[in-house]
Image (cartoon, rainbow, N blue to C red; front, side, top):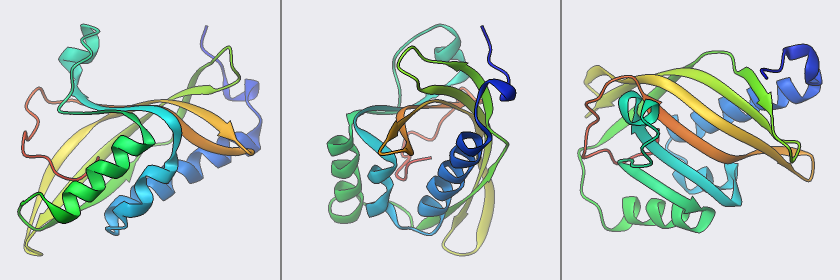
Length: 164
């Protein structure tokens, strides 16, 4: 059963919108060390494509099942990985409430477009798709329990460095 906005408190909807905007801004402004804090300790984060998502294939080019794994990814980006200097700019749709979870969490879908700027010069469309999220609350703060990044294209840059 799909919940309507009237089934969810307007303050929670606003909180979800703030969570989404802050998450994107954190990545866009290269504050990646803050990125794991948007997730619960036990969480799921995966970047996949629409075909795999539709087939219920749990494979992704990025996959993590805890905040600690997300923090490790950031450490690797900063200290070990070599990649072309670039930045992202997210454009987000309005989160759509899909259903409520048994635990009181909220399942949402939010469309996104990510623009990538390389070397401060070239601007390109990097990815479009949707976030399929389960948002739960810790101390009344909305946080991601699950974030599936479902890219529209079946071709995802396998050298992807930053989270989307």
